[in-house]
Length: 277
Image (cartoon, rainbow, N blue to C red; front, side, top):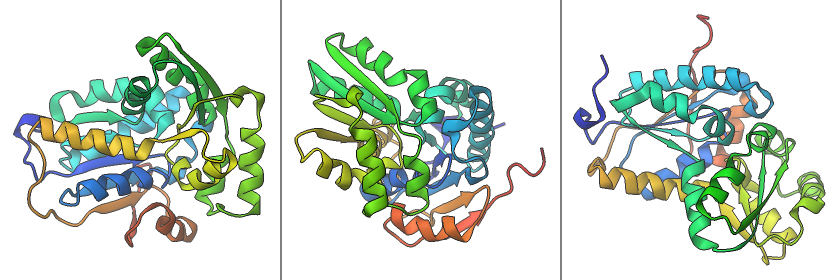
């Protein structure tokens, strides 16, 4: 039987998972403000991208990965994937119960945006799965009825970034094509509702000539993680063990791409989570 969160040691790791390695942007942001914490990352590269999968499949993957992270004695599980956060957060939270805290990438961002903007037009770009769920529009309007929300699915961006295409002619063409969509006209802020997207933030800012506020979810989620651990008095005050980074399917392409998403050099380890199905 897993220990409850109250009995876990401060030195217990923080678990983070994503559909691929894009969630390393969140891991990197957490590491930056919480350098003493050990991170255990799981990238479900065998099923990437989640944005094209059914809701039932995403819930199943998320539950299995969360169970794996609980077995690593994690005191917190961060769902570093907007699609999984929108479709599987509640079932993961229910399964985990008091065994660990569960953080989605959506709630902290929505709370931050609703506090910053009392009125105006907010744009959201994300995978098909996240946009179809309409989770950002619903949650933002729940907090502030005066906000207008314009959502646009941008399914080519995550695979493009995962393959290392950024800051070049190809990426600018794809990005500009999406941002020119009439749905995103006259927005005051744009939420990058996919953890891959902070990697192309400079190109998005260039498109808008810095006249539109770009909301980086990775930084906001990292601050939320810090605040929650501090509130529960679960911050690790001494240097932890080395962080570990797992993927469900290892390729040289994924391994070489990690330097794009994570500041420090890391080593991916293949963990065959799905081979016993």
